[in-house]
Length: 287
Image (cartoon, rainbow, N blue to C red):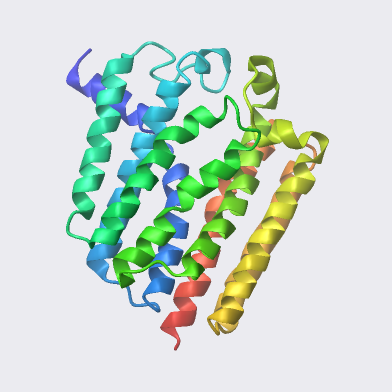
């Protein structure tokens, strides 16, 4: 394998060709950074978190494929992933994941001690998530905590403390992750049932669509409460209204449980996160 071919394999293993995971991880982190700084974040911290998000999501994808190396060949959508297809060894994959995590850790070394301390559970959550599909009925909830841990880290980096508000936002992100990753799990429902792994789509069963919309509703309810607490004005609520409209559109996509449309709904959650962030940023900008 030439160097170019190996780099292409690494790119696919890290899913850099599919940035949706980076965006779903980045949006809640940006919510946290903007709220923690009252709309005026330290731009060095912002770039550290953006780059760290890319690195940790990439490392998470590698660990996920390592954990699923015996499962992915059995699923139509994942059978061509580098580890599943035998294009890279498991040892090389682990070395790549470790390198990415170490670079991410090096990025936050200039930040305060609390942020460094929080990076430990963040790493443990990211590394352990792929294995929860073996025993936990709602691995998507665990994913939501892992994907949202950038929120308390953002507060720690900006303010040196983690208030209750940060954990409330983390809970909101958990419900959002359950919603969008259930849409994702609905795509592979048949294969996952055959293999015997746990997903929220299988756990919710015939109530999967209702569960997705319920989780969206909880997300919005928590964010409305946050808005009231922080005295946000119309731009913030316009962002939430836009997000609610997008969620309603997702219902039209997933109601018949067609895999292609469920996957489209999952991808479309990027705009939900963007709408919420736009409302936060615009509200602070207009003050």
